[in-house]
Length: 112
Length: 431
Image (cartoon, rainbow over all chains, first blue to last red):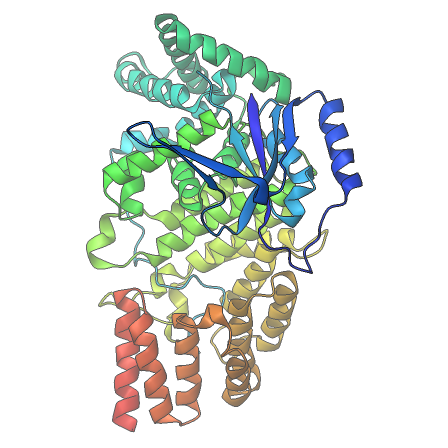
């Protein structure tokens, strides 16, 4: 069963918030791969580099600098893992360094 | 003084009420949970397990009165249910393929299912407790699922306990079952190292069923199921399944020690009777004794737990002949322990009330006023009521009346409001 782990970080870094180190991310990534559960995973570039595209009913394209709304948390990266059940997925989410500074949302990948 | 600090916030119904539905159904209630759990284990799907559990029980209701109850009723039901499930899977190949995949993965995660001794059903209900109380489900869904799957209530019965329309409850249960299936919440007992994190969730579900029973108003709702007794029944099952877990003993003890006072808690007119005015001769001594034994088990062999300490406080109330001779120093000491486990303002409030009884209303009031800034106590009826009682005892009538008015505006149930109106009238008459 595949689950996506959406790694969110707070929009504004507060001084007391525990920012994981680069080494911790490398160690986590290594653990996910070595456990044989890794399907995909990327870290996203800064939100200021995001661009939003919308297409209206007549096919017209609008391109704008994202983001549009004030958000408290920003998607910073993701993993897709393949594990037997939600409990195992939640364990991987809890081990993720991003769960300390922000939150990791676990979403099952839909099966068709 | 008024209510014991560990009590649920409102009154119970006066008398235990016979379970709704036919009495024959009630006989199967215990069996239903066991059967359902075993079938969930076998097929890894709650929907299928529920469907064939109901079918097997229906079949039993048809056959047993004619051919007699089989020597191993549990095994008979299991065989019948399994046959129905296999029929269903033969009819629906796509469904079967999906379930087969689920099962392979479930076995990969949990190991092979244990064999039952001499053909009787192994008790698999523990894993169902943990699935129904899984933290990934919304809190209200956990309670609904536990009542449905483990207490064996029907959806209309669960809906009645929540005072919700049947369709709303049906939707909620479907939503919860969908999440279990689609997000694949496993049917498994957490490992020993996970238990400290997961068991409190199961206990919380049972205790909230119990307090929901006590929040029930009297009168028109006397036909509702006795939720407090369902909660006690669930805790008894859990106690058998986890005999070594002291907090399970603590929770069962706490509920028994509170429920033992049920007959004395409601007056002849359906009004709430507080602890200091209860006829203690009407307390259920057998239930108190059982609770006391469990308190000892709960507090022996390790650090005290949240429910164990609350049960010890309830036991001290139950052992006292009246409020005056209650062991208040010991109760205050237990609240100190409880605060070290769970530093919540509600517990601090209860401790302040106990201090008032140990040292006098002035000391209690001083502690209450220190808690005035707590956001969780703002708009919390027991806080306003406790202040009102202590102000009244100190002869500060107008202030007491104001606090009673505040409590009256917040109180949830009619018997509670009636009690507060009565106190308010006394204040106003005196002032």
